[in-house]
Image (tube, rainbow, N blue to C red; front, side, top):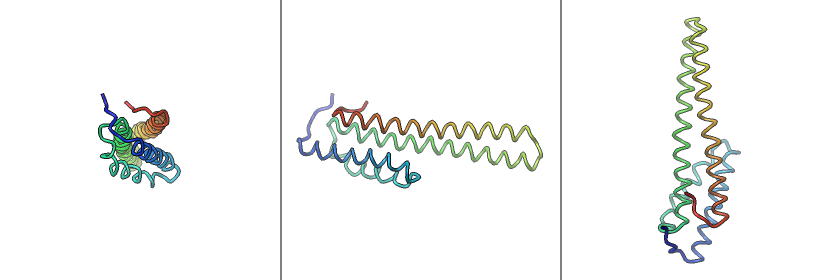
Length: 138
């Protein structure tokens, strides 16, 4: 059970802070991800202030969302890069079979990236709704 150790002023301050970080994650979609690092740095900077309260779940939620998204996005990029190399080899070897395989593998990498994008957006929306309702995230 999470204890409620925060004063009302501190809770309001951290709630506003979390609203800002959730907003920055959403805005980062319109900046080609350039703002993505700002809310994660903000979460690490204030995470200790919420320790032991339900607010801590929001900091942890956003941090985990960020890192899992980075890992899965990189996996998608690596798969696509591997497939692009195979596609290049198929052009040199004049092999349609390698080209088709490379396109399928690239499609799989792209699907991983799209799933990661949707999953990230889902987590941000779910967390933001929980914060607005004044409850922790799982």
